[in-house]
Image: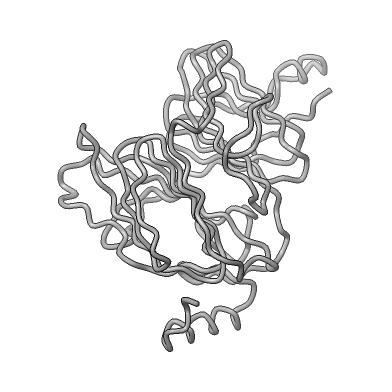
Length: 294
């Protein structure tokens, strides 16, 4: 019998201002408690209200010790960095940046044909042994992200595996699963996840029942502990072998993320996440004296 993961926490995103005045919905943020290890931050960005005025974006800023994952649903983001890289990611594209020992980069959103910008940014931690590794990018265009379709389920597989389909983002220390899942009404989705891995989901359209499989509790004469969750919410799961999601009268769309925790102490400070405050202080010294970029 499969041990399906129950929900331990439902988080309502909070509005925050970042960059040069960008309004975001934030579900999790870096904290020394490291409760979502290896995940550090999840932001949902949308510039869809005319009163927001001109798009200010994220001018040149540093990162060290983390990986940033940008996933565009609508509109685009132009980026450039201190290593000479420059480009644009558009609808359906993904940029997985490993900042490693240090990088300066700029991300400037642009509206799509409808006037909207819509997407997500995820921060994934790096283990101590890779904090000072060489920076690198994995830029994945929409056409190269495989799609799994079966019986009312559509899944874009960015990283990890669904059935026999493997995502194009590879060689990430946290062994992540990163999926964009759409379910039609009255459909069921089950995704195996290794025991011990952290698992979170972000539902941004519709509603669905997340949690244990009803049949498990019917056999025991118990009511299903599944919980109906409406968009927009972040869900954290307990340990187990698989995620179970069931839609009823509504369709649903959510991001599903899982990864191996590093179980190391962290010292977050703005765009840096190291293991100790001494390492943070060293980072700030390097920024001041001009040696941050090697």
